[in-house]
Amino acid sequence: MFLKKKLNKSPDKNVVLVGPMGAGKTTIGKLLAKELGFQFTDSDKVIEQRCGADIPWIFDVEGEAGFRGREKAVIQELGEQSGLVIATGGGAVLDPDNQLNLKEKGIVVYLKTSVAQQYERTFRDKNRPLLQTDNPLAVLSALFEKRDPIYSHLADIVVKTDKKNPKSVVKYIVSKLAQL
Ligand SMILES: Nc1ncnc2c1ncn2[C@@H]1O[C@H](COP(=O)(O)OP(=O)(O)OP(=O)(O)O)[C@@H](O)[C@H]1O
Ligand SMILES: O=C(O)C1=C[C@@H](O)[C@@H](O)[C@H](O)C1
Ligand SMILES: [Mg+2]
Image: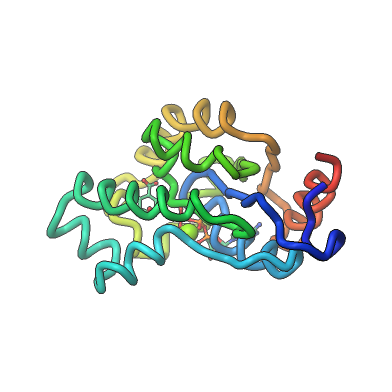
């Protein structure tokens, strides 16, 4: 058991949230960090801050490959730290080096979310370049087919987020962490 509040010492682990766009990694991550007394960080936000531009701009100018390069550098840095709740980008776990870096000190939590629910949570938001197509539902579905096995394989904890509000997702994760 590594919970900082309970042990009253610096944790040597991170909690890493993985899952598709709209799973709630950013939303849940902020709440979970508060609950654990960890620092919250979001790889997408760190990339934007470093670059001084938002993700749609990075995809426009540098393409997805440019974005993935930036993501890899950020994931490597975050993976070396501890005491973090890390919200990852939806595609961060595709890269084998990222997988190793996140797993090194990370307890990986997969926020498992149906494609329909992902769509419901993302369709109004224009900040996800991969979904700016005529058929975002088909894109989400294809990404899920490819990525769900990877998220599942990496995960120490899996939590289904459909029909669960953020608070109850956090409560469930905390209870599972306490059992480790
Ligand atoms: N459990 C939940 N119940 C209801 N709404 C949720 C839940 N989790 C997240 N949301 C909402 O869904 C939207 C997307 O959530 P969020 O941005 O946290 O997803 P994400 O996993 O970080 O996505 P991305 O990979 O694109 O960064 C937000 O509007 C958020 O308020
Ligand atoms: O699923 C993905 O590949 C992405 C998810 C977002 O978090 C961002 O990292 C970016 O929009 C790409
Ligand atoms: Mg996010």
